[in-house]
Length: 178
Ligand code: MG
Image 1 (cartoon, protein in one colour):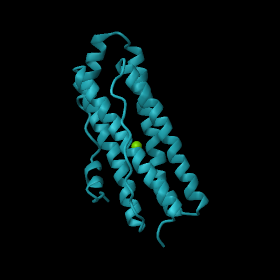
Image 2: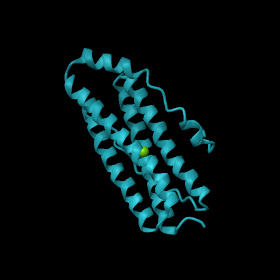
Image 3: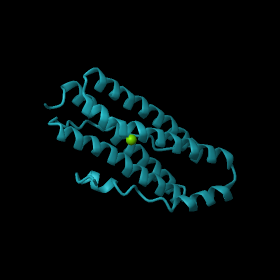
């Protein structure tokens, strides 16, 4: 049985939201690049790749379920922020918003008795706990070091070490790791 049209449409909306997230984080990456904070910029590139992976994970799922992908226009993200703290304030708010969107999808899957979608979406429910926790952690750290450029530089150096999740590329290529 192929996926219900209502569920399919909700996934298509969410794929757009995930790609918007990717676009937003790439915009933030370019802002950090401009500030010569290449560690933060690297962190945001990894985030961009993760969000692209989220979108493609859903894309693969809709295809597996016999649904039809309909890609929509991606809104233009902001391009300028006042500070690194302001960037992560927005990240924290954005991820809290995405959690609400994911929860809405779970609600639709339950209403339709679509257990396959519900099960699939639990990965995203767990992922959002992590995303929100990470964003809050970064924001807290930036609030603590407020105005201290030495501490900001140390944090930037640390963030150079972040690497993208190993599952990102196979998922994007449609070959998820088992
Ligand atoms: Mg996401």
